[in-house]
Image (cartoon, rainbow, N blue to C red; front, side, top):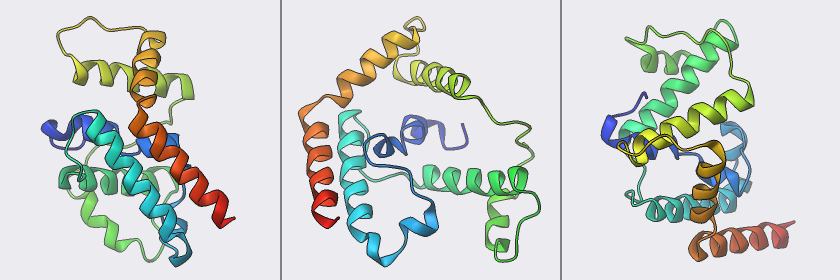
Length: 160
């Protein structure tokens, strides 16, 4: 909802690669030792983007929205921003929304699926969570994504 409306599906799926890899905190992900992880994440995210008919490169508005959300989470969920976070203040200019509470996993899933329905086919009726999971499963089962996930898994198994 924070990115340019034409980039909304990219925004919704911007962390989809984390379904196959894992979610790492930004400071950890940026360690020099994790270059292979970042490369794997980029390749996998590119495959997902292509699969959904999106441009391979993450749009600027999605990057800005992601940083804005990070700054909002830091401000609203962690209290006063710690020293060093001043650089994030620029992402909060003009942002009046405050995070009042976090969502339970089931609520987050429902909101995600409703937004996916809205963006994927605005004319079609809302589908159930089970139907959406089936649709997402079909996308995830494509050879391209499955192969990318296997290659990345073996890359990390070999590194371990």
